[in-house]
Image 1 (tube, protein in one colour):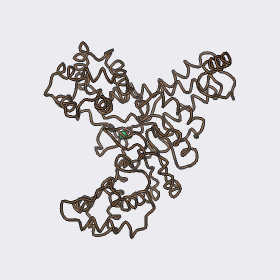
Image 2: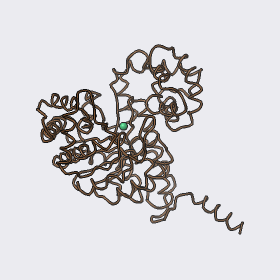
Image 3: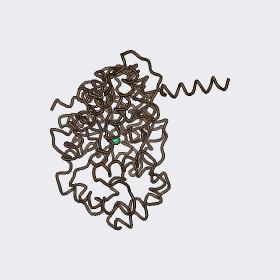
Image 4: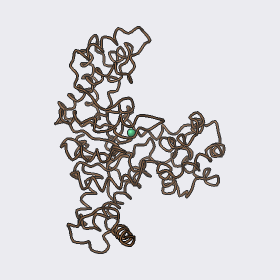
Length: 452
Ligand SMILES: [Zn+2]
């Protein structure tokens, strides 16, 4: 009995953990290197960033080793116990580099295991030739970062080193870089979180149109939408899974109207709580109106699903299965589900497989977990048409971490495709073709990046 188990387990490990089936002849020698060479030098499209301008970073206290740790590694350092206000000080010029390091050190030692931190280490190594973060390296790394910003740094990292053709930026700043390369997405969050009469008034002012009732409010949304889409926006972003669940009921107009007039008549200085149920009918109604506009104007919609960044949230709010009613109702709208739905990878697979208007975007995913990315890319390539997978978005505010994240992404994609060729699931040319699709061509087609 025991021997049988042992035999079974050693057999399972010999063939690897992926339950592969062989369809194609086994590959010719050297396929690993050929796939790796193709992916490491190919041009890519980056579907999601929060990138700030190069000059925006050139401020006192910003350009030192902490640059590589803000945004996501920060979440893990806070999760490891560092108070928020202490981290805030590490991003200012009130401390020297060594003072910053001494405060950070115990938290860095506690959290340097995570993929966020590993990505920072890889970035330090590959961009600045600094092999570790410690008291002997942080000053050298800081000096190198500082120096690089006095060069044509963004161009060097994004174009020369990363070979990125297009970058899609989620943010209101529209002058991040070369207009031939940069595209933008627009959120209409103010229409979903209009919790007070003052907020509605601010919208009326910004759109230069009176807002006295719900119809006016929808008109203001239309004005805002057309202004944005006349500009260089290519998609709509819905990020509300940070504040509420993703089920948007198709509520009748009178229900939404009731909430809207209640908000208009709130006493000055008071708000309708958006995490309570009271505002839901209005929010749901406005999300449907945003989707009407997306449908009429053929604009794709990116939706945050899965893990929320930051400090404490309700993961079930971001479960992509909440969205199925929208996929059914808006059959002509392209929905792009972000972040590989972490940790709802299986649910995401079934949605993208089942709905022709649903695609998977792996932005942010490799630094959340390279092994989840690997596991689910294997599974998605078995379940979802390859023209609906977009396999890279850095999701960072600075170019250094975009580069580090891209190296993660390329390693994982290379590993998955190599394994699939090794096992005869794909042949070599199919694997190369899929790399080209998921890291480049799909994003250009789905987001219509070449239209400008
Ligand atoms: Zn993001």
